Image 1: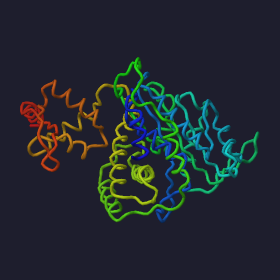
Image 2 (image 1 turned 30 degrees about the horizontal axis):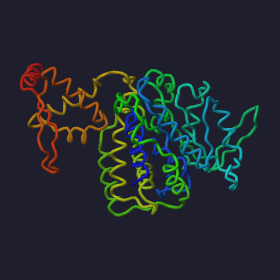
Image 3 (image 1 turned 180 degrees about the vertical axis):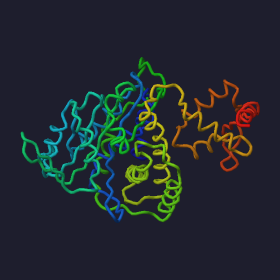
Image 4 (image 1 turned 60 degrees about the vertical axis):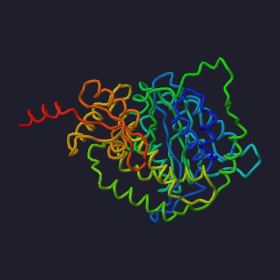
Length: 400
């Protein structure tokens, strides 16, 4: 069982959305491996450090996944764990100071850190430069040293900076936490925005859960992962899958993406592939299934990032997403499309849960009909969306 599987198994009775726990596991791996493993991209080395923010309405249980990841990383004791309200200047000072490990190991001199906050909007003391600095520190593959000069502290040098960030925010405060310069200046494009709008289930906790989180059982594999060092290599199948996906991505229209997320999603896929691989095995090889899962996970987060950027979080239905589905049905020769096909072709605009809400809304308006048919390739049941002929007639009249 992989490290991610262990996290998902032992949190199965939690009300926190499953995708929150999934990314909690990957963030934990990211923080403990930092810059000790990498993939040679030939023009630079890419490290698996990631920024991740869980977004959802208040009461959606965002805190527990952040708390578990923070506790695990702190217990591994191979990186600075920065939590609590802080200024960006204080964070820089922490990163520039050698850290003595509690386990008696050699001091940590590289600027490696895990920034964690279950209330991201309240985490940073207001500073117009904070998001710009965090954006620069994310790009660890571009610099071996980052220098900060201030009147108070003088010159502070960050050696080999490698930062992992994990936060949470509700739908209202995320707009305060990410000002305009963060939306379009690069921070949002570098951040996994993991959006959810409903709990995984309901559990009043009046009875003892069957699966309590066994901290030591989770810590043991994470400790082993933290000891890995070296260069990742592509398997032939993994490389071919990534190349095919990348080619398709570059032929996708991106003019409506003001945040730059789509221009960076390929790096997200590579970083996630490394983290998924580390969860499964220790050979530092990117197999087909690692890349496949990473593509699926990254395509799933893009619609949430778009909704945050457009200020649509908290809205029940995405108007742009609805328009995309209707245009796709109109353009289709038979005016129909399966759910799987819609997700494959239009993952930038909606994730699975949002697509379901869009389809239900259009069905209620009698704009489409729904049918369940078996996928010819997998044999599994799949929803099919069929445009109402009357809707098509009305649209044709308007355009005639």
